[in-house]
Image (cartoon, rainbow, N blue to C red; front, side, top):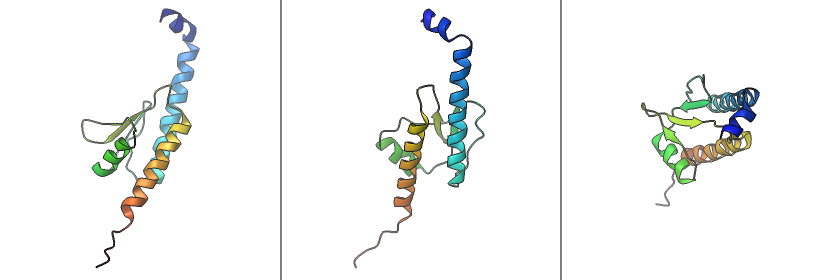
Length: 108
């Protein structure tokens, strides 16, 4: 662990932080463009209001998400989180929201 810290210090840590913050900003922007209310990401994490059913469906699809103390969906953009992962998350969210907006029609 000490060798890794010495290797990364200080520039490597800065690069990881900047990349993670850029990903959080990108995700927040993508969510805002879809009409979600997003807390301004001052750290590399994003908090957004989504319906409970959407949160549960995203978890069922395998996304490791959590809620804030006040109930918002919380996504932490850690160094291993890539833009491709975030784009995939947005794609799943879009598919869930489209499915949720399609009315159920009865044959009766």
